[in-house]
Image 1 (cartoon, rainbow, N blue to C red):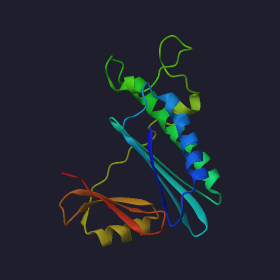
Image 2: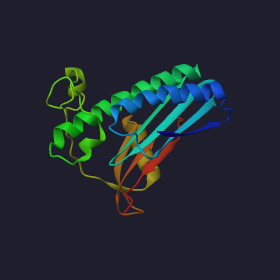
Image 3: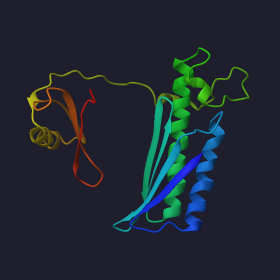
Image 4: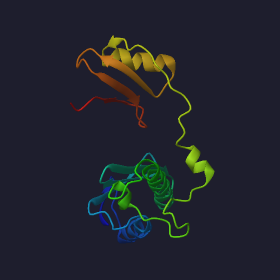
Length: 187
C-alpha cells in the first residue's frame, strides 16, 4: 500500500511516519493483493487530543476510521484495530452475499484453515450485522434549520427529513466538533 501521511497543526516526524507505516502494513495480510489506491493518513492535534484519520479506498468500499487519544501512538494503535474490525466485517458480508466466483470476494484473502474459504469469525462479530429494528415514518417537508431544531428536540445525533430547498430526502447530523453536517443525494 502507498501512504500519504500529512499533519494538521503538527509536524510529522520520521519516527511517527515509520510507526504509522509499520502499523498500517499489518492490514495488508487481509488482501489478496495490496490495494493500488493511496491510503490517506491525517495526523492532528486539537485541544490536547492526538487524532489520526485513515481512509482506504477499495473497489466497491471505503474503509475509514478516526481515533482521538492523549497519545498519538495509542491513537494509531486503536485506529488500526478499528480498521481490522471493519475489514473482517466487510469480508464476512462479501462472503455471505457474493458466493459466485469473480466477485468482490477476490479482494480479500480466504482463510486456509477451514477448507471452504469462508471466514471464521466469532459469533459476536456475526451478530453485529443483525438488523434488529425497522422504522417507518412520514417525512415532513422542512428547511435545514428546522431539521436541526427537530433533531435537538428528540435528542438524536441525526435527523432524516424532506428538504424543501432541494425537494430530496436529506440527513442532518451532529459532528464530533459540535457543529452540524448535511447529507444530500448526489443526483
